[in-house]
Length: 183
Image 1 (cartoon, rainbow, N blue to C red):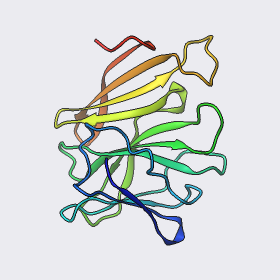
Image 2 (tube, helix red, strand yellow; image 1 turned 90 degrees about the vertical axis):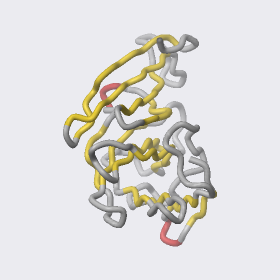
Image 3 (cartoon, one colour; image 1 turned 120 degrees about the vertical axis):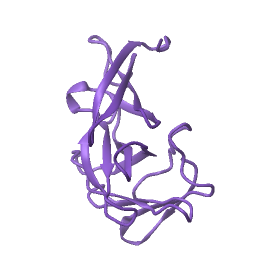
Image 4 (cartoon, rainbow, N blue to C red; image 1 turned 180 degrees about the vertical axis):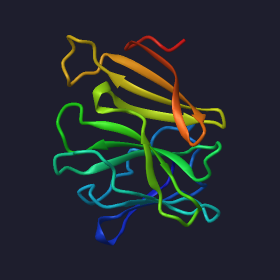
């Protein structure tokens, strides 16, 4: 997503996209960070044709640190108004907790809700980027081997998801050492 970050009153984040929000094929927007503690909603907007996304409070513990929005990607498919949001706990040393959530809303003016978590804490991975098309969502992350220090991810992880009814279900998983690339 490319855009201009505008910090609004009450600590809510607003990103105004000059040419519309991306469909996930570009890099994450590193400046998209809420000004609050991450407890309240953040707003990420699009062009005049697209209503802003108000990111709901997410089920993620950041130990009173900011919850930084790394990327929001609209997800085409059977569920209208779906998007994947990648978030990371900010202001922490090392590799802060990170996750990806599927958000849905019943209409372009409705408040989004968290439909599911796509990257669990058990996976101990840092969500990096998401892409999507009508058939699938691909989530890329960094992770660690058993003997690597937690500061320095030394492996990559790619998880694929496909629509099954109203939910995204895992469809593929690849991993490998840093420096190699997915097949």
